[in-house]
Length: 452
Image 1 (cartoon, rainbow, N blue to C red):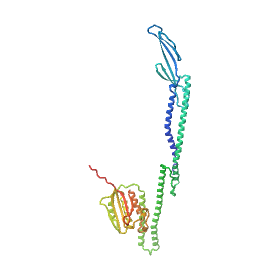
Image 2 (cartoon, one colour; image 1 turned 180 degrees about the horizontal axis):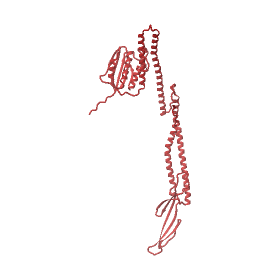
Image 3 (cartoon, helix red, strand yellow; image 1 turned 30 degrees about the horizontal axis):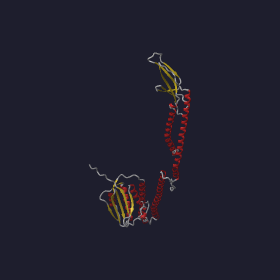
């Protein structure tokens, strides 16, 4: 079944679009309010033509003399009326009118068809009304004003689009420059295969997040290369270890069947059983090591190391003197009892193979840690080999014989068990000779009961 093909989305385009959009919002808002301000400035009443349409003089007769009724004289233009009388009182009044255009921000608007009429009388009373009855000379001025607004809108729009285009081009170019190392890393990773794990991605000279990513990728490739090499070495060593007892078993059986009358069949069967047991132990160790490699979770159970060491040493049979030094109180750790028992058994098996006369087991608890030590009085381990002994299928020169060398997995299994229990296993030198394997586990802290 083929997987659906997804068109890759350009991160560069998305970043540019988002940046331009974020920048367009404040710029467009500022430009819009700026255009509103300019439109209001062009619509101020002070810029309109003032017309005095009516100027009137009203004659009122005096109260002390009798005369004709009140008379009003009006003119349609500004000026002075020279009228005087001793028996009359004259009062003047006028009405002032202005027109304001109704402008539009649409850049292709035509002349305004309507506007606003502002009327002010003698008592400064203002009347603001909307009208389409606009004088001819005012319509020409409205047309010029609307054209000015149209030009400002087009110029502002072009300026905003130009600024956003320049900003988008800068972001596009900068994003391409920033993502160039990422593309180089992607191309290099695409060319790396399981057959060539020596290649590494280029690390930019700049000390930024991309350089940190490249360093992390290279570190991951280092670990992957080491894991693949260890796996290949493990498979080769396992094949070699399995081949030896199988070849010996086959040779013994072939010799016995070739000369059945001369074969010591009880000895042949015993040798075949020994090789079978060796194969069984090796297969069991390989399965256990594989299971430990894939175990990443912790253990919920609590194990008392004092009881575990006591039980294990009591049932153990050894040809050496076994000294056990245990505390008189429990030493609880979190873990699996069968695995911790296997760890102690592997350490004691290793000490059994290399000890001269005595083996010592010590257990102590200090600083929230449990410390288990297994010592032997054998030849010890050279400093340069104290880490190599924990590699799989590793046997030192004096331990390569079939009878005493074991499978070469015991110490590897022990360290893996210690690691899975959040502990640490290492070998040190104590005194003048012998090897001392030290295992450190975190203690389970018991909570004290609350005091009322």
